[in-house]
Length: 103
Image 1 (cartoon, rainbow, N blue to C red):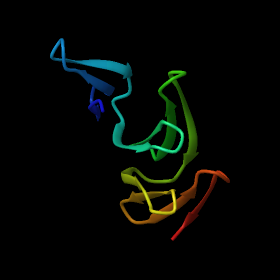
Image 2 (cartoon, rainbow, N blue to C red):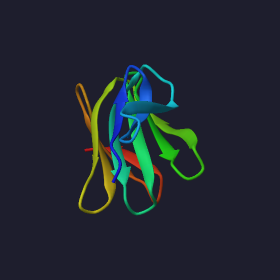
Image 3 (tube, helix red, strand yellow):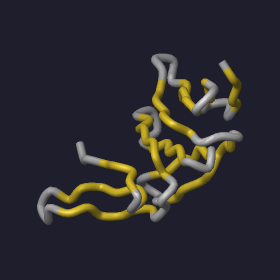
Image 4 (cartoon, one colour):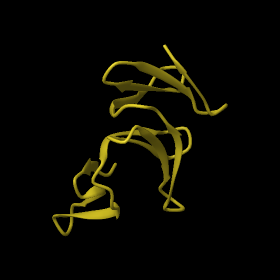
C-alpha cells in the first residue's frame, strides 16, 4: 500500500522512489483521514466541520456533510459506518444511506 497523509499541505501521498510528498488536494483545514476499502475512497474531516469523500480513481473530492464544530477524528466501524468525533459530540454516518446521526 501507499502512505497517505493530511497536513497543512492538504491530502498527500508519499512517493517512495522520489522520496517526497505529492499533493492531491490543497486544503489547510484537513485534519483527519480514513480509507474505505469497500469502494477505494478516502473520507476526510476538517476544522470547518466538513466530512468529505475523495475518489482516488476519479480524483474528485466532494463534501458530504457539515457539522457545527471542528472534526477531530474519523474512522470506520466494523459495520462500515463512519464514526466522527468532534470536540463535544460523537456521530455515526451510514455511508450507504448517506445519513448522519449523533450517538
